[in-house]
Amino acid sequence: MTKVKNITDLAKLAGVNPATVSRALSNSTLIKAATKARIVALAEEHGFRVNQMAQRLRTQKTGVIGVVVPLGHERRQHLSDPFFMAMIANLADAFEESGHDLMLSRVIPDADDWLERVVDSGMIDGALLLGQSDQFRAIERVAARYRPLVVWGRHWPEQVHCSVGSDNVVGGRIAGDCLMATGARKIAFLGQLRAPEIALRYQGLCMALAAAGVDAPRHLAVPMASEGMEQEIADHLDRVGKDIDGIFAATDVIAMQTLRLLADRGFGVPEQIRVVGYDDLPIAIQTVPRLTTIRQNIEEGAKIMAGALLARLAGEDTPSVQMQPVLVRRDTA
Picture 1 (spheres, rainbow, N blue to C red):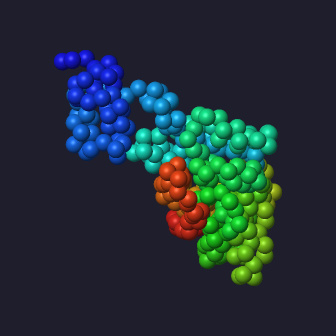
Picture 2: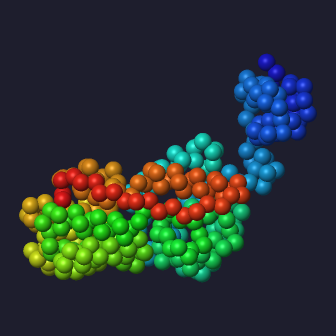
């Protein structure tokens, strides 16, 4: 068998010029389907693989999507957080067919131009942000001139950037209604409010309780980072555990930690204290008892984000998408 080292060798075998081979292997519409199929078949037969670096230099495309996690609101939070891992796994699946690689970055936005540095680095074709953190203005500034940018997070009608996420206010209201429906009246919210999505969940909870004539919830600040989370929750429970009968945890991770600490202190769940989380991560069905939570469909959200970014890379414009959260009732409420 003739050894094929490069596009020129493959062109000789196919009886065409190298430019035709290059276009055929890059799936160009300028090449007839029959010719393209014959060249691809010859390439496969001879085990020829296009030099991706050379191809990217010719097309001025990197084939890489930047997945960026900005952590202005919680610098100690790690990428090992189950929410980030679930989102990254689903994004990897969503981009598999397009042939893009993902480049992951955890960013502490110490400088105003942190996002400009990412999108202007020349290393990526487009960017996905997993959360707005406290960087709404920086994201808006970049989105005004950089189109291939899609962000997971809240949506405001006047915003420039394309965002995908759940309606956090509605999710908070659903959580409050669920807790009250099970008899809870002395309700606490566990989470910190610097992240906009978390603040909106708390807002929704307050609205639900106010509409029912129930006292406003206690706000018990808990960090998003695993470091310090356990101790903060433990301190809160030791101080007010006997005075509450319902907990809305800002995330499933906080809820999972809370369930263990409640058990350590002899509180019955849901007999004494009902607990509702937010996200519906895989861990929600692994807790004891199984966690009642608000589902923001992460798998569907990742698909929407990927589709929106690919459309923007193709020159299209895409609107923001706000998904409706759903109550997943299990054992804790």
